[in-house]
Image (tube, rainbow, N blue to C red; front, side, top):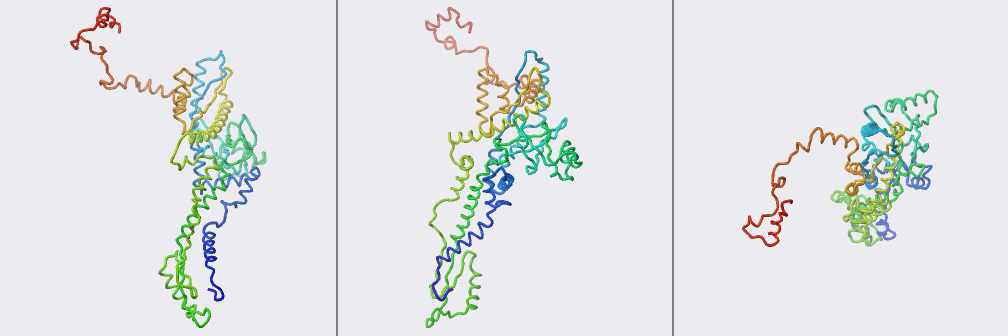
Length: 480
């Protein structure tokens, strides 16, 4: 209340809305441990601030459903249908030895559970960019253990792949048993002062896959849309707060004044407070009570009808556009050629990762001495995803029908590995003997008589025409 000049209700309205927004929406303007200013600076200088970007990306995966879903879209796309090719085969090769070595390699790769291990790595790549792992292997088991990216650095390139170094000083002595033997030994050597803390695991015992392979520092695939993610989150909160504000009302209650004196209330503040508390108990939280001198009692609405834009929908679309992914994949109601091309374009990113996995397995084959002088093996991953499986199967099946030597790739598209093909053949032909044991029941659909053809004229009591007599005379139908 102000007895000297009238109350500025428009100013009161602005302050009320401002308080509602500031107190409930933009509290810290931070993402995890970093402010948006820190993140923007890291985006401008990613080489020296990669840990800020990685931490932010990890945080967004937990709190932003849109960021999580975009990254999961890429990680779930890969199928890892694989097989083994031969190349550089010399005339002097021995078929029995080649066959034996081929299936030995196939069994070894089967033991490695490549689809599962590669899928684990693929879950990490979109939002961390780099996977650092070490191999734990014995005669029966194979496992890839991920290392914390905060304690790893890219070190060198070998066979077209990155190798990394690991900080031994980051190991908790109580957890040393969780690491493979060679890292345990390296840790002992480090504690004894024989080596420095940065340790490079053996080439055949480490795996480093990088999504953005053209960069020498970690840079999460979608981290540049962090601004759009925050805009979307802010718009959602603003929309909710706007709905609350639209429903908020303030009731002006007239306080009687002494007409003989300027703006002198007839009720004391204590009396007004008593009635205010009584009225407040009977009103909901979204209704306020304001006492004013001389003004007539009325209700003030804070609803703002000037903004008719759907800012949440706009921000959602902007997020997908910034990510380069069609939003029709997630919440669209239409599909067509454009969507198909968009998915195929995204699949190209997955095919590039396939090439890195191929090189890693082929390096493993080389270092494991599986290649011989007379022939060499080559591991391959089909360019196939969950979105184009049928097209790939049809393409290879068509090639098979025209005699192209692509039967192994057609079977690979059907999720048949070399060991499974060999095992399925034995299972089907030798054990179950399906072709002899699974005999269909006799019916008109599965059985036919030796005598065929349409009914004869004689059976119908009709005479032969001239052509029919000639055919019967020449016994032309006897050879059919």
